[in-house]
Amino acid sequence: MRLSGKRAFVTGGRSGIGRGIVDAFLREGADVVACGRGEHPDEFKAGWISLDVSDPDAVTNTAESLGAFDVVVNNAGVQVEKTVVESSDEDWDLVMGTNARGVFNVCRAFIPRMRNGGSLINIGSISGNVADPSMALYNASKAFVHGLTRSIAVDQGPAIRCNAICPGWIETGMLEAGFQLAQDPDKAQSDAVKRHPAGRFGKPSDIAAMAVWLASDDASFATGQLFTVDGGMTAASPLNPGLF
Amino acid sequence: MMLNGKTALVTGARGGIGRAIVARFIKEGATVYAADLTPGGSLESESDDGGLFIKLDVTQEQDAVDAMETVRASHGKLDILVNAAGIEIEKTIEDTTLEEWNRSFAVNVTGTFLTSKHALPLMREAARSGTSASLINFGSYDGFIADPGLAAYCATKGAVHALTRAMACDHGPEGIRVNAICPGYIDTPMLQSFFTGEGSGGGGGNIETLQQAVRDVHPMRTYGTPTDIANLVTWLASDEARYASGQLWVLDGGLSAQVQQMKL
Image (cartoon, chains in turn brown, red):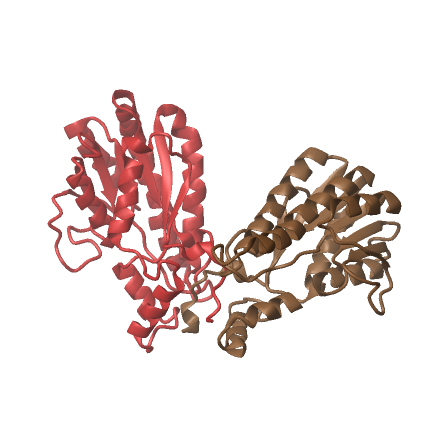
């Protein structure tokens, strides 16, 4: 087991990628505490804290109450499917509050309590490097995560490593919501699958596998980097004439 | 005029993009050597762009030496070099023969190396007597992300990108700026060949439908023209770009700014 003896904190652990990371960390022997908005999820073997990461005081109080960690994963994130012009102040507060300020809140509160040799893992996105249509604030919030990742790696090394994982299209509720924007969601989905050299969408476990590696001591020289796990999608041109 | 009094040499000068560069450079007041394999280059029609034709096979070192000697004899310096000569093999690596692979690197990479190597002494002269000399390579957005069935081409363009940065580091102190322009889809014979090629999936299909689909996937809803490329090359060649060096300038109508576009 690659994470035995390590204590990990995972934000947004209820479902999707976060749940995949929690399950994988438990399998690898880590002691895991997860957080999210709302009550303890069903059939959840890790510890649970009800926490909205966008609330700085609540995050600080949680960090103080939980003690030291070896691994912190900033996974909690939300998306709003709008262009800049369509986005309201509330949309800004929601998306930037969770995806940008939430990551900042957790980093600020937990880094001082991380053990030497610790690993901080942020969930960025391919959308922080290239744009998904009608996802303006989300795309921008993930670029913030990428920049913050490098800053933390530079400032906190050698005590703490910090990396980001940039998932592509992973089978989660958020992906499903994206496809519901399409005029023909089924057609959009089959078209999208074809654009993956891997021939499929990702699963939360694909991202969790990278998170396990980054959390483990195998990754002790990896810091300050963005690791894209997207089935090869962004290696290919957005334009794939073979499809037409 | 942006290039008044400057001497320029353009390789691949009689191809689709090359001709547009030569014509624009002349309009901006430069003396232009149009280097290519033949006066017509890759196009069927003759060129009346006004460039001074030099026969140059970029894979042959002696051709590069001779071309630069011609420039030296008349002008004694070279302000601008544009390495626009390039070929594209539309195949996966399994289908690509060693000969095709070597030919791709010979033209796209070795050609850029040889022409630049022998141009540098003349460009140093230009930098000493003028502001800065400008060397412009042709990379591609395919050097960053791959189109299907273009393996050797993608690899050569990645090599040109790295070479561009290396040359910028080495020769910046000598007053020579080195940049690469990375076109996306530009309406040239090479692009039309890609549309009709078997590797693209366009073979046997409706070319007009395919072309429209390609336009639609661009944020600007069109692919580019050789004039668009010439506009940026002219700026990079001019003294306005005197602080621009070591960069890869993507010009693609926004194509590579987006995640793979779902057909919504």
